[in-house]
Amino acid sequence: MNRDGRSRTRTYAVGALALLALATGCGDNGGGAAAPAGGGTSAAAPRPTGAAAPTSAAGTPAPTAPAPAGADAAAWAKWNLKPLAPAPAPPTDKPIKLERTGTVPVFSEVKTTDKVVFITIDDGAEKDPKFVEMLTELKVPISMFLTRDIVKNDYGYFKPLQALGNHIQNHTVDHPVMSKIPAEKQKSEICDAQSALTQQYGTAPLLFRPPFGDGANTPTLNNSVQQCGPRAIVLWRESMQIHDMQYQAADKKLKSGDIILAHFRGPKELKGATMTQMFGDLLARIQEQGFSVARLEDYIQAPAS
Ligand SMILES: [Zn+2]
Figure 1 (tube, helix red, strand yellow):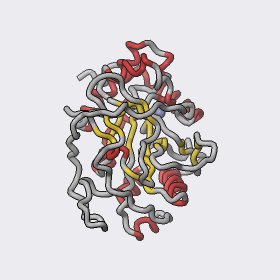
Figure 2 (cartoon, helix red, strand yellow):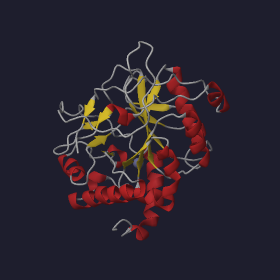
Figure 3 (cartoon, protein in one colour):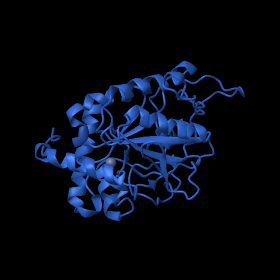
Figure 4 (cartoon, protein in one colour):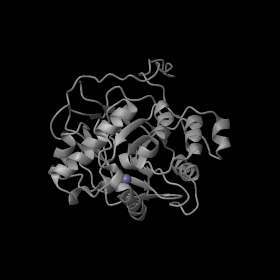
């Protein structure tokens, strides 16, 4: 439909924004986050994923959706990693409940006592086949916040990652600083990306992340998001660099429920390191702090449709 309208004239801008994203860590200014949605009462969302998980050790039936991180020791060894503990079964009562209409919540963490963190990967510039191999083997869940004009030259790259159960989320058409553009332009940035991603990946993004976290808590951006379909604005607590994370917390430690920001980046942006080396280092930092990685969308209740 109207997906690729203006994109051709913007090729140069994508290159520029890739540099900008690198220089700024794609928004390490995205700090403060409001509390999750005020207690929603919407009905349970349908969860189309997977087969029922096995019965837990306690004998109680585990909720649906298989626990991620189920790779075997050999797979971890192949990537020179210590195995992450498998994530617990997803909570049946979701800590974040999204509403179908109205103001969207802004959050950078999930309230949970599970010893889990969530990995989000942004933009989509680097399309390294080795990373698909790595995720296929390690089965670590991720959420992908994709920028239309950065992924449109190869939408297909992300499909095997999606086929692993990972969700595609909205990260604008071409990565602008949202607070610097008028409301109408904000809306087209979000809505045009929403329709392109929906068309390409067959499912509408539920979540939105503004580039650099910019404008996340402004009424203007909230209103723009509301008009395009996503039902939450997602920020982060830690930002992966090359070998380690930048922490917002003074103690530089992961906490249960933290959302981590990473990027699809390659050697040019990572001082020679590859996407899989960066991601391996991220998993090592998570493993050594005793956390496992859970799927963010498993902790969020979508609005009743
Ligand atoms: Zn970004």
